[in-house]
Length: 406
Image (cartoon, rainbow, N blue to C red; front, side, top):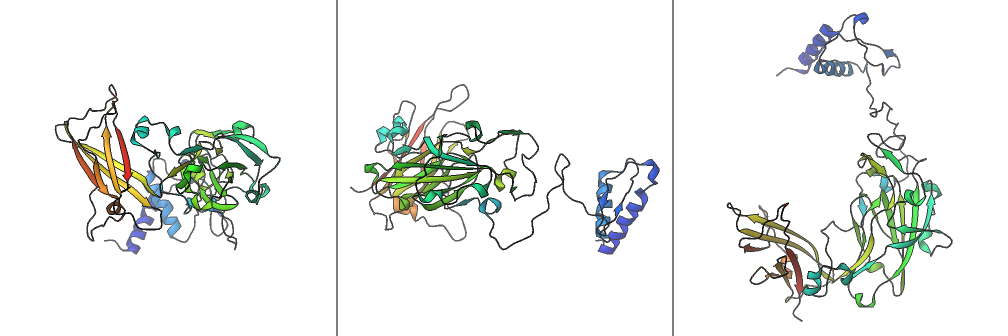
C-alpha cells in the first residue's frame, strides 16, 4: 500500500506531466485562492477527466491553492449560509423534521357499519365527513405579513376560497413553470428565501355527527403544497410536509361539543421544495380533498397483503398482516377477533370460512430475540384464482372486520 507521502508525490508527478504552456491549451475557470489572489491554469488538450480530478485534488491538498464552490445548472453560484443565531429555526427549514404529531402513513380505507355496506364501496355511506367547499382565506406575500394568532378566534372579513384548489389558480400569487432550475433565489438548502415565500391562511367550522360519539376521529389532508400548520379550536394540532402525500392527524382530544373550528396556514416553499423540484407547474395551497373519518377506539389502522403464486402459476397463498391500534387506554377485550374474507368480482366469498385471529395477539405480537416474524399473520390457500392482466383486469375485494363478544 502506498503511504500518504508516496501518493502525494505520485499525484505531483502526474500534474507536472500534464501542465503545458499557457498558449496552446483550453482555459480552466478562474478560482479564488484562500489567500485572496486569482490564478489561471491551462491544461494540455486531451487530458482525461480522471487526471483533471487528480490535479484539482492535489492543489487542494497541497496548501489550499484552490477553493471550488458549488453552483446551479445555469451557473448561478449557491448562496452564502446565514450566520448562526440564537433563534430556533422554523420546521420548514429543518430537514430532519417532516411532520409534527402526524399519524403514520397507511393504505386508504374507510370504516363501515356492516360487510354489506363495505362491499358496496361507497365511502359516503361510511363514517366520513367531507370538509371541501368554501373556506375563509387570506393571502400574504411574506410570512412576516401573515396573521400570527388568527387560529384563536373565528376570522371576519376574509376572502373565500374553494378547497381543494391552488392559491395561484384562484388569483393569489403567480403560477410558475420551471424544468431544471429552482423557482426561487437565492438557492441555499435547506433555507427558504425570506423575500419570496407567500402564505395562505385558511379557516372553516364544522360539527361532528352525533353518532360519532365515543369514536376515534381522524382529519385527512389529501395533499398540501408545500408545508402547513394546522390548529383545532385554537390549539396547535400539527405540521406536515410532503406536498403530494396524505397527512392525517388524530383530532379526538381537540374536539368540543357543538361547533368546531379548523385553521390552516400554508407556506409556498419549505425545505422539501428542494427535493420536489422537477418539470412541473409550481402551485401551492390545500390542493387535494380534506375530510374527517370516524373509527372505533380499537381500530384497523392499516393492512398489508401478499398473493404468492406457486411455481405453475395456478394456486396462490394469500397472506395478510394487519396493524391494529388500541386507543381506549385499557386492555383489549379477550373476545375481540379480527377476520378477513376474500370476495370475487360478483361479491361472492372465496374462502370457505374467514381467516381470523384474536385482536389481542395481533396488537401484542411478540418478536423473537434473534430473528424476525413471518410476514403473514393470517394465511389461506386460494385454488386457481382468476389472474389479473391488462386484457382482463379482474379484481377481488378484501374485507377486514373486527368483532367483539357482544
